[in-house]
Image 1 (cartoon, one colour):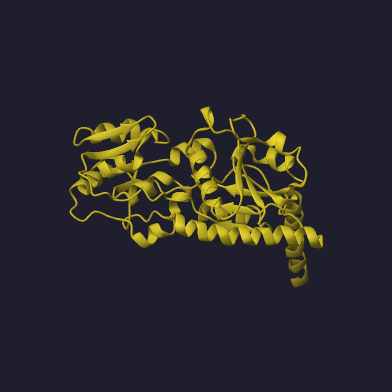
Image 2 (cartoon, one colour; image 1 turned 135 degrees about the vertical axis):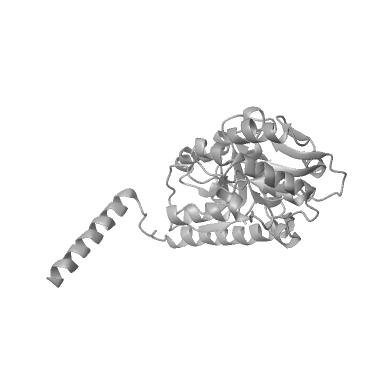
Length: 333
């Protein structure tokens, strides 16, 4: 297999976020399959390759560049056009097109469907984010009634629902980095997550939504929005509850009832297996083999790509469709 270069803007400072950690987890799993390295392209990092230096090297046909940082994709795709590129797609909704010479690996079926429509001639693959093994039910004493993380939470959740819930039970709102998140989830009875407003303001989708899955894996009951990639695994009334359900008062009633429920909703272990590292490595191995075959075949046979579904092509096809309908009408008369 070709060597993989996972491109990220930087590792420290402002670049440290959930998307970065998810990409680094995928990188660590890829290292179990083939040679792989991290390459930064905005910020130089100690003991880490930098893209401008890498592009000065020769024999880069044995390399696959994995790009993933949404807003940087158009610039990176143009810069790396002569090379083998794969787009690791997290969120959907970025306003760019991709040439079909770039295979796309989607982290959710929601994102997979988006690119299936947006880029119909690209090779597409589904590889969910990994849920680390430390996220599991430790059967600890749960001393937190309700847990909320401030980041990505809606104004409704923070300013309306939580103040009301604080009148009835113990609510813990986290607004900083948590060193041991699995243990915190194991201390909580209910986890609230409402990101629909946040992603609507960003103009892109929830790519996967790790926190509700991690909370479920730790035995929390989850009240969550079901937007974007969350719809892959959240199943309201079966393994979670839909938050922001019609009215604040109704939410409060349902949450307080869930606190008292002797048979709380849980996520089945067979569902979690899809997201554990063993399954992800198996899927990634098959995906990488298929991508390597594609690059080999494309380069050796000088394959001619299918016409891209550009704006101009869609306009021409629409005009032709209208002309065909008009011809049928005139033929009837």
